[in-house]
Image 1 (cartoon, rainbow, N blue to C red):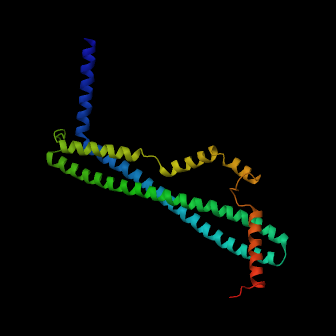
Image 2 (cartoon, one colour):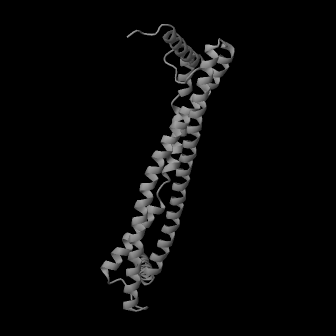
Length: 238
């Protein structure tokens, strides 16, 4: 008997909740539209921030390229003049600049990829929210036609549109930030990959170097100067 009474009470509560939702379906849908628009604005701000970061990195990369080109020319001149000490110092700076250039280049590529993915997500969300706004207009029109005190429960098309709209908004609001996921992945990858061990092994002569070293830069530029000098001293005859 007690079980039957409890079941009846639960059924009445569920029926009352369903009735309340039916009576206020348009208000609930309008609130969901506002929440979706807030999430959409946040996504647009994240996209703008990502694009701005990519542009900043790209400008820094271009400036680094200009500095590297200029310093390489000056280092070649120092090598040609026999000023090995100054050339060695310049090579150390060049190695650091080239390492930074590689890092900045990777950042630009990563930011570009992140911006492209986020842009697609924003565009998709915009289309879905537009559809939901149009559905809200339809729901309000139906409610006005049926009267302020009539329920929408009998209108299967209207109920289906509201249900789809609520699911759509929930998926938008619960979506993870792709930029944050990428950043977390990069941090974990750096911690778990053991790249610092590989760098130490390469510096000790075990395997190819993972980073550009000053000695390699100096050796390369010295070879270029020697080849250029030999070409001027022994011009090839045609």
